[in-house]
Image (cartoon, rainbow, N blue to C red; front, side, top):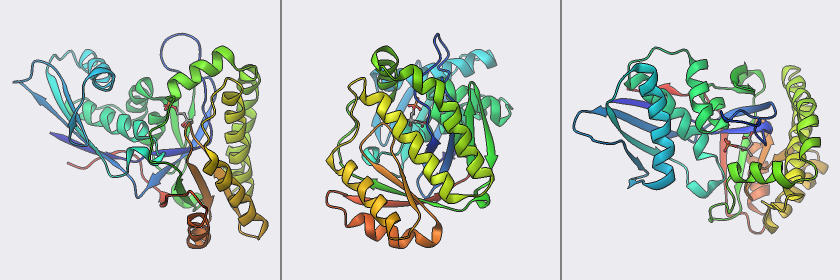
Length: 314
Ligand code: PMV
């Protein structure tokens, strides 16, 4: 039995859209921060008595597409190892599925590492990340801690957590699951957003702006660049009819701007869902969390720090 712990990550420069063809390769580069304080734990056990793979998520046996995605990853590992044994996979998130944190990122990062180790393969982190990327591109970034870049097929660490300390406040705006998955949203954006080509052309520049600010340890420039990337991604999706925001999303972003106008550097980013993530310096986290909890419709605020990459715990 191999057990792996992995954290979700939040993109500061967003990936949205895939390169044409097979392989699940992002069309644009992205840069994320791996979170601490929230995690997925996954056990993989190879078993002689199984006639097929089994996957239990948060205590519930999975079937259909969720199971099929896990089986596809296991099949890749079996093919690489020349092995035919089936696996029992048990995974648990310590954060709610509707929290707006990408459980697919921490989930597939944990599964990729646990499967590789369970099948006794000694792959470097980059190769494990590539395996995770094929299931969920953002999962490739969760193999590493701190600040992480994903460019084409390659995920790599850019700077450790201490490089630019910050907190991410996850402001939950609904208990409902999102209506359109990011995979479908990207597909629809590519097919019908009049701004998709402009997004793909401009995203590398926006990514470079985020990376430059990070390397210069300029928190305010990083926050502003992250907001710009998120808004450009959403404008692209919106023009294809995909509005991921709800009313509280808008109110929460207005509150972040109001906090900033009062002198506290706080910036927002939003993924393919209605929740708002607020980036603040650690010393401003308590004040900003109280501020965001007061926004009507914000159900709770999860305070996350910067975390480590996926790791084997037993
Ligand atoms: O990991 P995927 O393929 O489900 O896509 C994630 C997309 C965003 O979270 C919206 C952006 C990102 O870069 O993480």
